[in-house]
Image (cartoon, rainbow, N blue to C red; front, side):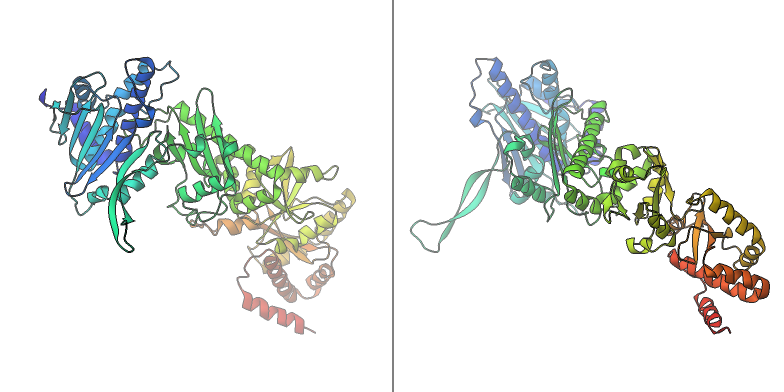
Length: 628
């Protein structure tokens, strides 16, 4: 056929592929090995339907060879090979896939299983080589042919003396540049590592002649080097084996090696799905957070395989953000792939698989929560905040999926409990779920408002994560029970008689509260007497959506806007401090001002807030203590 030119669109596409489409050059080897696997698949299938074709399955293999001196890397298969016409058709026109066409012709036959996309993947060879030679002899031809090209300028096809059926692809590896070290693809260890990474589960042996050393016969200390064919891939993926026959140790070894973790996973999820979309998934929940989990460098996602060939190292679309800590892989037989194999078309099939995986993870976590609470608690201590963010993010779209996986510390159980466990213990007639927020369990437990609730026999959930209150705001209610902040101004525990008595006290002391507000002008929304305090003299409550704890959280964020909660200074109507304040309002307004500042500072400290004028408060306390 002589010299041939690529079609104009193919020439442009090849130029793009060499210079821009692939950022990860090492995947060229994956593509060529996948093509070789395709060719062997087709030969095997032909042998099942054509009695003239005789093969021994044990002989089917892919051979990789390195010649460092000549800068040659060769991939040879003993598959179906290509005729002169097929070489021109498949390699002369980019995106013309011989394997894909073959699959379409046989799509109704269950035995066929082709990775596909030959024409496109082949051209990835030009990312690392300045000349590519393809020698092929078809099962349907007596003559072998050689296709050769140096890139976009064109190609040649001529006869060659290849005797065996199959295809041999020889890459002349480019010289190194300042930016690219192409010589790495001539190193035995690098090629072995790439095959292990991308093509470990190709079903045919991938072999390479490796140099080894052994002791010379009849000598004690003399050694000689020799070469031996070594199979570099395992061929049978662990995720396609019967999980009943896989030991925990095998899962753990696979996980720690594949995902480079020093600790065994806390949970293994192994599933095989049949039906409209067929796939295998092997997922792992780590025992600890990745060191970079909360950095911009961390990228969630599962490894994506098609028929044992790694397509994407991190497929983000396969897993939602709130399960972003899950590691693992999915192997699907017939995903729709676009030109580069690196990029997936966002088709219905991928979305269905992702949805199934999300449901599977959720189901496994629910089972762990129900049947192995200790392990679930361990999981939640590590990843619970991530689930809480999932509940809160995306405007609460996922709250119903995640709410029953959440745990909160209980004032009565003294341990983490679910919302449902709290719900089942609620007192008769109790219409709200009580909670209180703070930095630690101990600090929350000492809050005056919490003491009153506990004294009345109510269970209180203690919220110690910054996101907790936002989660409750998004949830709004659980099984028709709303959430009630113990430190909110609308906490209602009084009888009707007590309410009337308190209302009367507050009306009678309006002048007192007005004087006190002058002393701490602009600091609080209101000052009043309360019955919510048992033994404590004073507390701060919040009015509206922003609580004191939420104020602290929001103002710790990078875009701090100085948000303030609307706070109310409440004074225990039954404490002797109330009578003292009433007396001072009548007889010593100057001292009342000092008392007010000290009481307000104390209330802020109880809530874990800073006191902006500690020196002044210290001096005032000393004055009051020395007052005769």
